[in-house]
Image 1 (tube, rainbow, N blue to C red):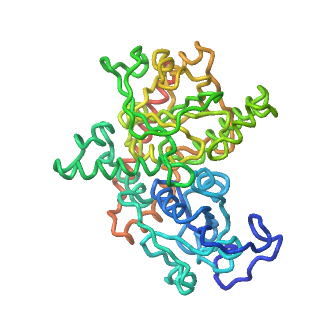
Image 2: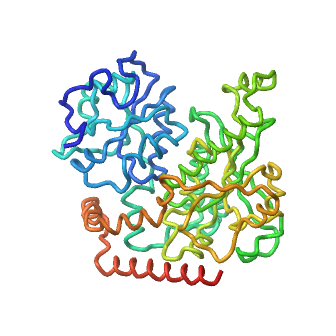
Image 3: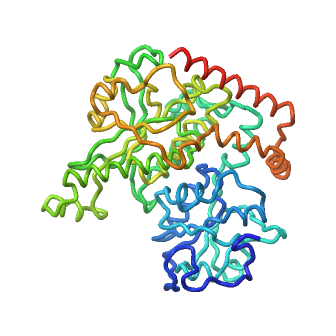
Length: 463
């Protein structure tokens, strides 16, 4: 039995709480509690946290243990460290603090201990292993608030894409989709979908309060003929502003990094955290934090000042990722992946449809100017026949992040975990009314993965 499975179990004593404080603090309506499994991250999780954060000034996020989820729901895809306090939840810009081992049945003593008056949850019903409402105690105490569930995305949806190898989630052109000129349905339906998507991008680009503008969002397009990814465009391209946001502040270093960020996971998040850590170390070496009038002015600025680094994330199109990885990757389309990158506290700007190969023309003509550094991390998910970062190396701005604890956690690894637990996930699909993949579909997925792996091996041999 997990640490916090029963609502009636003994309340932790001082020194036993999973996260400080160890003594009860004053309860306030400005401190909001939200909890959940937060198994492999999708933008619905972030959307719930955003809505909850907007209801107060601090957001406490309870994360259930692997054991409690197993007892009540079934095995998780991601471990507690990957889901919670080390990774996904703590990386969300609207999360103030995460509480691992939070009870599966939300406990009044727990939320009161951490000073939260209200608990927030979506408008769906969550039950424990006995079929009872997990929020029955906080509802009875009238300390429960409901927010809207994010439509069009769920763990069940994503598992279905993996098992059925579908590609109908791909977006051909995000710019045209956001303008209502592309996508399924009639012109009216496309226009309505475009407005909803554009609003969601604005929401996810908000600051840590969820109420004010935050990250800058741009969309890139080549102005000349499309070129092979391996060539790298020599055209500086053009940019469309999707959402206005904060620009780099005086003295900040511009850092550029890019990727697919599919199934945005602990591997991506730890890479970003290591980039921030490396830039912090560089800032200390170069006097950013010295006790000078300039630094005092930075620290006393609006919203508590600003840090030494402005991180720009380029996100590749669906067809680009599929070209290299095959099967039906990316599992998440560029819109879904972009929302997850935007909600990450380490990111200051996003460029949709960024080129796979950041050429000199591209890097030197970024709207922020040539970056001070271009970072890349340890990855074997997408082996290439060439080095996409030659231009960054030639400019002397290429940097690498070394090995870390989550370096092997990527979309491919997550899909393999799902396949290994296929039977359990198919049962979950059936309970939720989703079509089961069946043996034939799963074999097709496995064969496609093998073919993709063989192609990657062949490419590597031809390098």
